Amino acid sequence: MKIQKIETWTNEFVCFVKVTTDDGNQGWGQVAPYNADITATVLHRMVSPYIIGLDAQNIDALTELVTEKEHKFPGSFLRRALSGVDTALWDIQGKLAGKPVCELIGGTAGSVRAYASSMKRDITPDDEATRLKQLRDDFGFDAFKFRIAAECGHDIDEWPGRTEAIVPTIRNALGSDVSLLVDANSGYSPARAIEVGRLLQDNGISHFEEPCPYWEYHQTKQVTDALSIDVTGGEQDCELQNWQTMIDMKAVNIVQPDICYLGGLSRTLKVAKMAEEANLPCTPHCANLSMVTLFTMHLLRAIPNAGKYLEFSIEGLDYYPWQENLFVESPFTIEDGHATVTDTPGWGVEVNPAWLETAVYQVSE
Image (cartoon, rainbow, N blue to C red; front, side):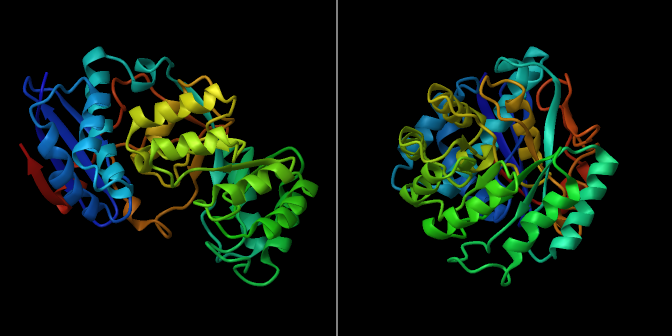
């Protein structure tokens, strides 16, 4: 079974990928969101030429081949492009076997506990608390993540005092029986992160994400070593050797790979295995309701060191208008705070033909 054709449908934010084999099998995948049109160009110029005509079932070998052929261009865009092909090939494997992808990698269909993940910083503590309470009441979420600091903020908050206000406000509004997580998005120096971390500890926050510039592993480790709560990170890291370094030095307590940033499910399984061997949980990053959240649901149903919950974006079309009409039927239904992986073969989702008609089409064959 050889790869015969790779097709992409793209706008600025989303790129869906369809792989067709010489015996007519087809699978759907997706590159990482954002600048997806650039990633599609990378896919057709720097990925497709090497793998057309090769064995569609040996995904690891294809990934390594592209890595070696494009060794002068490591990094994010190449990995984002690889994720589209990798995930489409996994969809083919699942459909051929008549099984959901999670079952192919050792898991089963079923539910996944989710945490409601807020992306907003331009929101007051009281308004954030109000909408999180509504989500708890409407959908049964019992875990929530909200934003502190300013993104890459150099110790400057989104506005003065916001972090000190929002942490106790959210805790008091939601009560002691919910899990609370925060994301600083590389906002702090180690000293300030440790200071804020103690505020988080005092308010029962259990998860402190990306406290320092994510590329400064030693800074993050200072925070990890100083605090008793879980310090987490890794969503931006796309090279396996960097992951091994981060895990070996215990820079974080929980690893957070993003399947689409990292290069696909196969490479993410390798990171999850590294973490398992180091006794670290894996709670992947998946901060929007494109296929990346679906991929992550399948992963969490299979790996032995799955973290406590799935990241589930609560931002609708007002924040992410590009999420509209991606699928014929949304795979993202929350009941009692849980998402569900079905037993439909492959990824179990159908891309909306009406959306495809609006997208820019490219093909390699």
